[in-house]
Image (cartoon, rainbow, N blue to C red; front, side):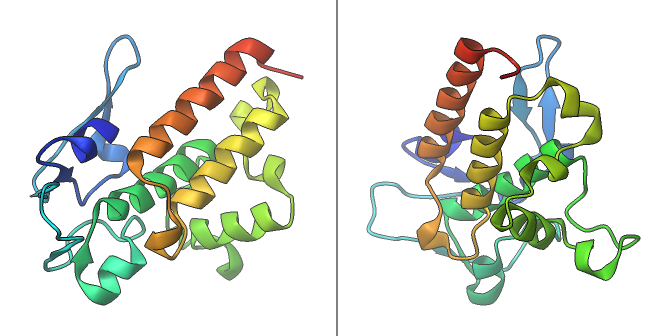
Length: 176
């Protein structure tokens, strides 16, 4: 993701979601389906692209939906939702859940702020988790999916943080 956003002509995907991330045989993630993508212009003074809202409900940047202003941080928001989906094994919207738990992002923000991070984790992953790494991953997802785009990291920073978390994981081992 960082590569397409940081390119000379950055691409804003507009539909980052789990079904648009493909895995190779070696488990390397590849971004797919650029049907809604827009080309940005890194060399100009433009901070956004004004455009009709496109994307998938649950992954859409709330500021993009309100202002019709698309920025690379719109994809950062969607990526944060995707990280939460991977770690919790919950779709962004789950209408079959209790009303307080239907919007996974709200549920995750509440649990994160209350310190209930371990309870959010997909139960199938619970045995193989280092709590410090888990806290960093949820913190990154929450930062990416923040309601204000000005508070979100850029995708390059997200990539660097993910790499740092990976290195911590490899140094410390799976459990602590």
